[in-house]
Length: 469
Image (cartoon, rainbow, N blue to C red; front, side):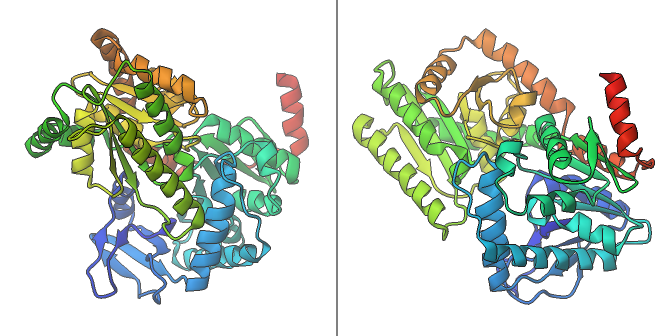
């Protein structure tokens, strides 16, 4: 396993390692332990990398990143070039030439460590946009291994990706893999179109012919640990906490909830503007309606994130100042990270869940909310531009760019009859129950370990396409 971060963290070099929270780590740990796997990643600070170590049955191999690496490879190319571009350029991507070489160098460092650690004819899974060159580099170093690459964020359409000065290098880097996974079918299709346009390889459907190899590009939508969320939703301590939150907010108020990383892709400011319009419409007051917005701090030293934080906090103040009363406010704003137990307690009290990013690869908060609603109540308002919207089409879908439309949709969610809530939620829960993070891991690793037949020649592929069409 190669990822930007190790599955463990520690507050300081002297502190003991702790397993990082999250469904991805939970899903992959059993597979890695069973096969005596190795996880390669950055330890999370610019300290010199420590020696490889074992933690809870998993062998961890730290990769060192200097302060300059963090600035140029991570904060620069990964998060100021690729992140905004892949999220529909909702913030202008920065094409800084000085970031490209560090990105290449760090990717090569990861590939070299993987080449050293992988067993003969072994399997390597590379995670996410930080490491898109690793598959191609590893293919050169270790042609015997099977390589998978999974992109957790959206993959952009041709018109956007074409802007990238290093588009061919990134595509060819990803083509070093045998299996390339995307969150949605659209992402996989975008990739194949770009490969046909900007590389010498040729793809049709879900397969690409690359120098005698057959590369699969397919959607593998990631999900949550459904059983774990259900267990938390029935835990007596979590249920008691939910009752306390409900009492604090008001037993007779409709509670709306937003839970997001504090990022410009999440559309939190647009959501707040829509909530403002709901209160301004006069059908609801602070006495019967409240929004709890949880915003998890992210990249707080980056100017774009400081700006979006300031916009959000000004909007919260504006709404509370105009519609609040002594002792009651329409928006409770929590700028902090909450443990999963606390989050599930908030899911339990939320009558309406607002998940309205401008663009998201998947969005697991939407699935966690659905997983917690065992009584089939509650309404999920979901951006149509999330990967989750493909599966969760019984949610109330919304265009986050349309403030008036979003306000009208929120009104509809608030007043939705219980019978309709139950019909929608039962369907949503069935889908989330059927596809969990464990089935995602099993499906992707099964594809990675499957036989890889030799690719047909580009001319044969094109002839087959012509016959089929």
